[in-house]
Length: 526
Image 1 (cartoon, rainbow, N blue to C red):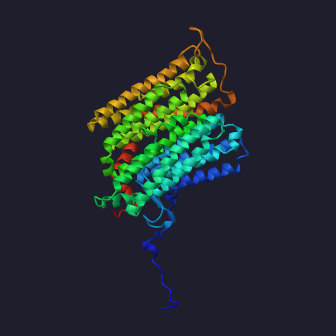
Image 2: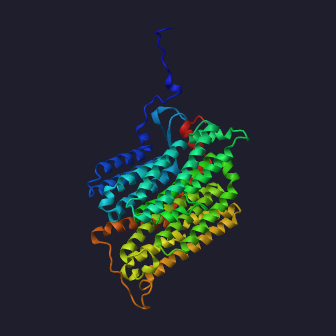
Image 3: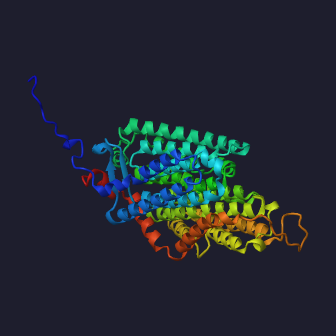
């Protein structure tokens, strides 16, 4: 009847209860970095103030991510849906132990980068937007780790790509532009493949909510082309993670930006690709992962060996570190290839270790350059005599990245080797051990030439050449503090790994059996 009003019952489409205060913690990391970036942008001309704002925001981000991880470990996965629309219609942020752990370690890396930038990023680069770009990068990284929606995962990847490209070309030197072109070209191809896979997935399933995909995929007929979609995701994220044979872009670009940018990239960007591979192929499409398992085994072996052999062939320390990043990605792919809870847990442990140790190694390389005057091994020498403390720090990090006890790289390799042998993949276990041995040779070569040798190439035998350059006294604390902090974490993870083991095990169980994740999104209706 005209003019008659009807009450609309929104309880079937929307949450009618206000969002609990504690649930806002789910999106707090993204909101914090967006606001921090805006403040840094507004104060871009106040170049002495920006580092303090940036460091404060990153410290706040670490505290928020730590609180989020503590809540997830206590209460299980937490979901917040934008606009109060019921899932799968509303844009969902769903945080489980896996996402929370990666977000926390990523925030720690960004915090150290914000401090080290006091030494490495001078006035002009601050005015050109280093800190706003770093904030934007962390917005994308945090969003990728915390989102519960595949399309929004794509959006956060785009945010990360744009900000990383800005950081890469900060300084506008010719090598930077050359590295940026290679970086951007390969990543744009990967992003396009990602978008194609997302569109194809939506066309087949009619949903992009991750929890909804888990239950929808189970009901698909055998003829559904979900295997093609899984292969597209594997290709796209393998390119972003720098897996073999499409990994050449990383060593060709990571040595060109400022050392702090290379350090943050080494700690964060490829790990977002590995995270996405595990999230999508292990949790969302486990049957298709199993079909591609043999291919992924060879991808893992190829990535490990090509990375470490490339590292052995380098004289430039930054290029060598870029290849070690690639080699580490291969170890993480072992977890994806096997797909068992043990193997996925080992891959997560390795990801945490790699994020910390590779970031610290780049910082140490920057201090070596400031002390010895070069990144090339031919131009370095005598650093032990000039700075025994730096020699000790590099030695600890070198042993850690090689997987030797008592440092952080030891336990992930033990878990991955054991999981490989349990799965009957002796070749995979042998590749992990061989990679560790060759990595020891690569970092040992750097230590011998740069620290133990008396001077640069051409120095008479027996002559001691002490480098004259020094890290300025006023910035020495900012250069060493991030390294001390990361080395302390690396030693702690080596001698007392139980807390991180507990988080990694809960994360891996959540990937293999996503029941708690689905309960969080659909309120236990599954």
